[in-house]
Image (cartoon, rainbow, N blue to C red; front, side, top):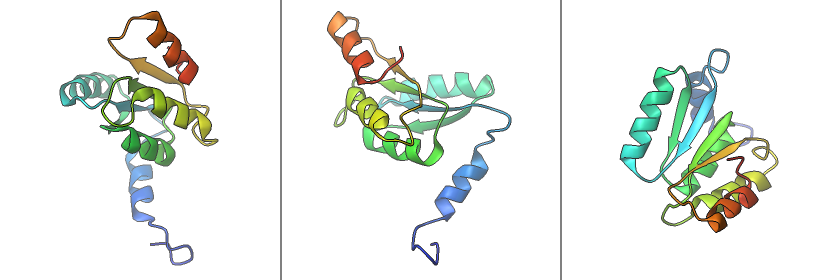
Length: 123
């Protein structure tokens, strides 16, 4: 705990120490399916990216605020808070509004693609 503010600092320090921003970009992957996370994590890690993972919308918002990733790969369909709402909330927060969001989804209907772009996705 920070003696002046009472806020936890160990978590923030360990996250900063884990992320090597000088040598790699930070990618936040958000998906509720462990197999999807594993495949993406391994591929990005092998390509030299620092990879963070979130399995829910709430966890994604927390990790994005803490780490300020360079990009977010976001599943559109998740239980609880879906990816569209996560994107809207990320874009509404000053500290995360600049982060590009790419939706990962099997949804191909025009209405879903429009919803993803309206929520703040770049692709």
